[in-house]
Length: 226
View (cartoon, rainbow, N blue to C red):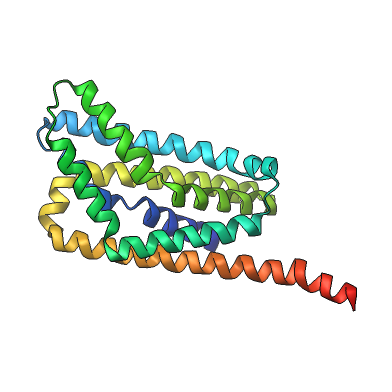
């Protein structure tokens, strides 16, 4: 089992999900709710993210084969996407959008718990937590495990997804406490650091993809024609 690959996957997945950056939005949605309702909201969002990640983890490689996309091509595209997302996080674009979203929702009344669940799942679980960058990252690592045909690595990646989603649940559950301890400035700094990490991972994906294409595709063709 490739422990380095699993650790890289854990770091990139946590950085891309960015639960600390999404935390202010969760607090904004659940600020007026009871403590028990907040716990259910945190659990529901974390479980939804877990299901989405597992779906893309198992079906991602099949989608690549169906559309005839090579792993290296997808790695480069995913790397470019991660780089753009990382730059956006560092610049604060995602935080601004999050604040606008939270402010918009605070204008509406949370009449029933079911309405609260529905409203919090749609913006938090899919667009903000499990976004395009997360999907690309999960598909890439799942493809790596499938290419190596390592069942232990495959199980390790699944376990990592479960652990990271549990951390998302814990962070959301202790949202108000974290905000008091770290403060808004602290959350902002952590978000920027995560954004820098995402950008670096994106650059690494691009370099790896280009290197593999040059070594395995372009160079053999050049040597063949000589």
